[in-house]
Image (cartoon, rainbow, N blue to C red):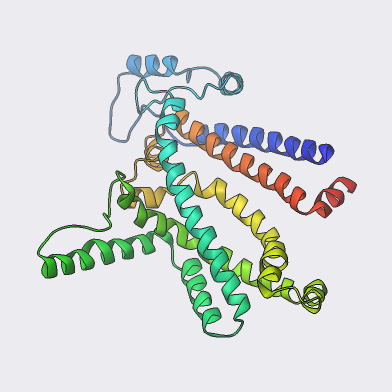
Length: 322
């Protein structure tokens, strides 16, 4: 077990170091600098002073060494676009909002996905199975921003107009923008979570169908164990093993938020800062957010690998034996 965890930790460290290196050099390969714009003339002395202030006047290899040293100290630098604001401060302020949105979307995806998948497997080739298949196809095929736009139109325009005409009030049940109270979180969470519902539904359905046909399920039935006990203690529990891997990897991607959904619903998360930093060629902020995202994804993947080997001991024996 220890050897397995150390192997995974080593892979995680190498992955993060590779991301830091690639991000640094790719950002510096972009033409221009954060202080130059098309059709804009900047005094040479001012430009030189700005480059010196942010260390961009040094050779690239020296900038790289300094940046690696700062990262090891937990210093992501200061944003060029948002003056006097450190990247760490921006992450501290905006990430909780993105994580909140992501966790809500993940809860919707996991709960509905598992329920629909179990129902589809238990009613194979029947109405419930066909219904869940339709939901899965829609969730996978339709982009989240299209779903978000449709939700805004349905609840922000059509439903609000109907309420106004019938009850003569402008009350909006589900607001379509901003991030203030619980009502404001429902539509963006649904828009972001529908894709997860689709993936988990299909995986849970196929996994359940595979488990249902196993010999130990037939043995349990022959012993007179109740259907409810067989469903929850044997079928659903074993079918969840492959789902755990997918859900764990979703945590890293969903909890960092969706740039499009955050922009569409005016959610004040990290997405706004990331898009603005790329547009403005803000080296420090773009690299800092990219590395932060990568660390979060790698950490969630590492946690899933460890959890997976705890759930299924065959994994750690196989991996360590290689």
